[in-house]
Image (cartoon, rainbow, N blue to C red; front, side, top):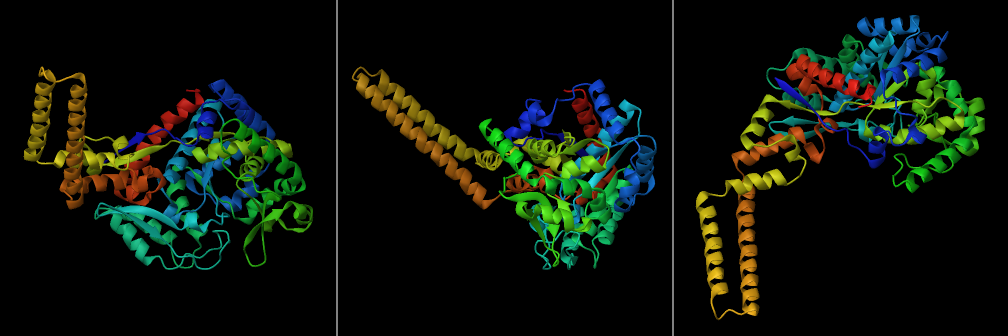
Length: 513
C-alpha cells in the first residue's frame, strides 16, 4: 500500500510570484473562476475552427484506445487539448514526469466537464532535445540505499535524443528490476524491457514506455521530433527566424525587467542567436545565428528546423488548440520570457498552469517515520534527523552523568553568587565560568552523538533508508527517483492516489484558490 502527500511546487521567487497572480504583465490575467476558464477555452476553440490540426499531427501521435477516442472527439467537436511535456529521461525519467502527465489528464477532465467540450490530454515528449546529460540517468532505492543508474553516451554529441542509440542497458535494467522488489508487477517490468530494447534510440524508448503507460488512461503522447510536428510548426519557426531581431530585443528588454523587479530570468539571454535550432548534415544541432536567420528561413526544409525552449510553447499553441500547458516551477518561471517572444511575433501567448507536486510514501517508509516520530519535512534538512536520532541513542548512563555535571555546576554557581564575599565583578566571573562549562558539556554531548553516528545503528540505517526515498540527494523525491519501482509495486494504487490529489489541485487552480 502507498500514501501520496501533496507539497508546494516551490521554485524560484519568480515562479512563486507568477503562481500567486502577481505578474499579469508577463503572464496575462489569472483565471480565477469557471467563467474565466470557459471564456478562455471558447477563444482557443474559435481560433481553431475549421483547422485540421489532428490530421496534421496524427503521425506524431499514433494514438490508440481511449487516447485516440478523446483526440478524435476533440478534433470532431471543436474540442480542445491540455498539454504538458518533458524531455526524455532514462526509463521514463523521475516521478514528476508521471505527476505532470496525470495532472494534464485531470486538467483535461475538469475543463471538459466545465466547457461541455471534449478536451484531450496530450503529453509532449521532447525527443528533439539534445541534453544527453539530463536524459542519461535516473535514481532508484535498492536495499535501502540510493543508487544512480546511468547510460553511456554512444557518440552523437549534440544530437537530438530521437537519434541517440541506447547502448547496452542490461546491468541498469537488472538493477531497476531488483529495486522493484520480489513481488513486483511483471506487466510494468515487461513494458520497460520491451521499450528499452536493443536498436532503439533514447527518444524512441521514452515515447514507447510513456505510450504504453499513459494511453490506457486516455493520455496521448506526441513525439516532438517527428517530421509531422516540424511540418505543422514550420510557419511558426520561419516567423521566428524572420523576426529574430525583434524577438532578441524583446527578450533582452524582458530579462532586464525581470532583473529590475528583483527576480532572475530562468533562461539566460544568448546574444546574436535566434530561438531556432537547425540540424546540420552530421546530425548535430546549432542555434541559428540572427545574421543567418533570413537565409535559413528561405532555404532550410521543415525537417531540419526546431524550436528552443522559449519558442516551443509558442509553436505548440499555434499547432494545437491548447487551453493551458501544465508545467513545473522552472517552466512557470521561463514563461515570463515566452510571453515576450510571443508578443514580438504577434502571436497568442501560451498559458501555463502548475502541475501537482507531491511525495509517495510506501508502507516500509511509513513505518520508519512512525518509529522515528518523524515527518517528511524532517528529512529536508540534511543533518537534523540524523543528529536527533544520534542524540537519542546516547546511553542513559551518559545522559545522567552529563546532566549531573550540569546540575552540580549550577548548584555550586548559585552558592558562589549568594556568598557575601561575591562582588558584582565576581558574579560576572561565576556566570562566565558556568557558560564556559555549559559550552564544554554541550560539546561533549555532540561528540558522543557523533561517535554514535560514526559507529552506526539500526535507527540511523532506517534514517538513511527513509532519506533515500523521501529526499534523495537532498532533493524532493519526485525530482530524483524513477517512477517505475513505484508502479511495479502498486500501479493502480499509485495512479489512483496521484490522480485524486491532482484532481483536487486542478479544482483549486480553476477556482483561483
